[in-house]
Image (tube, rainbow, N blue to C red; front, side, top):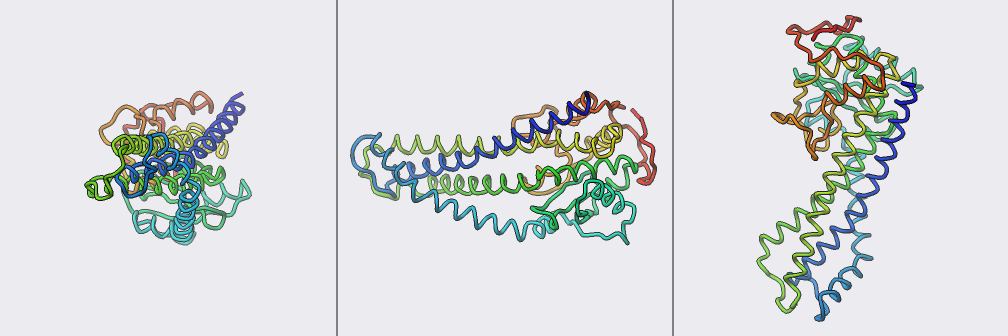
Length: 341
């Protein structure tokens, strides 16, 4: 029954992710429409000189030309991400590529997990940082990469490290990294549009024509469209990130058959995962809890460690040792999972 519960959880979250991702284009259309209303209200776009409804209908008729333009911008943005995302991520985090020769034990763990699923071994990268974190990146096989911090390697036992690598490999198997890149593209475009709108409102000071009697209502309605669309885009992106962490935890258990190792790894990571990076990258991290915030808010990118552990106990049959209080880091080559609490 545990296996059935895990698989059902995976299917449900993947379906939810598809539905959420489908909401981005709708939000983009709404925001573009809002922008057109604002520009019309400011006098930079012509109104028809009649009622408010007529002006709104005219702005809607322009979507046939502005939406293809927005899609063209999205295509350029995607091309930049496709060819340059990994180099940009490495530059921002300090990650460096490692080979089997320099990290034989770590590399072998990842390779064995990939072979067990018939996958090409992702590129392995390490960040020389004391924090405990990891993430996967890439858009297709041959480009996938799994990155871990030095602190994670030095702190976790072999079984725990294997569980974390399995968690990241699950993101690759489920195409989570591709989903988040697409979500980031949409969210990035929406952010740019929203920023342009608000900067325009601040600096334009009514620089357009003043002959539209519906200017005030048009601007207010347009701002409402832009604000609601921008806020919902952020919420959708956060929800995508949160749901997939449960799926990846479940996938790690399926790969390793060791729920206790995944639970113990999460307990060690808890409160020790702080790692700098852009918002889009932080959503890919193994853990990303806001400093000083104890409650999971609407805009949190990850569920709390406690909720993830509870899910593993319920669906994976693992045992929760409680918060990790060990002072000395364990050897990464030990095979036992310490049950400290």
